[in-house]
Length: 144
Image 1 (cartoon, rainbow, N blue to C red):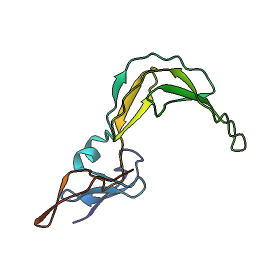
Image 2: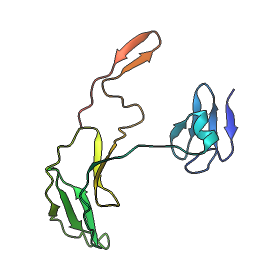
Image 3: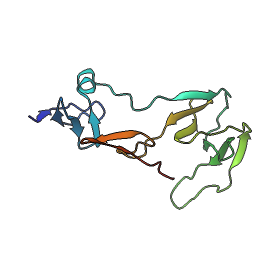
């Protein structure tokens, strides 16, 4: 039996529909929740971890990121759509970080390099076995 829980979504507080067996679905957020998430009212979407402690001092008006070489870089923020901002980025600190596939690397609020697992769509499971009926299928790794 499908139940509707008023204001059940822990993120947007909209209604969710579902049952204990098939989980609960929020149309607004497009997320499936376990019953525990609905009861406790909080969801941990991803866990970030510190990779490198740098304590980079930020300046106003710049966007900081980890470039392809694994160094901390920055670019001047655009003030409007018409103003595209500076297209050339400048290196703030050379780190030479080796990035692992499947993680998003960023400069956190403390000025350190952190990473968190990337979500690649709701059915993306690289190299994991998926049980379908009585058959076991192995999904191929997606190239991105």
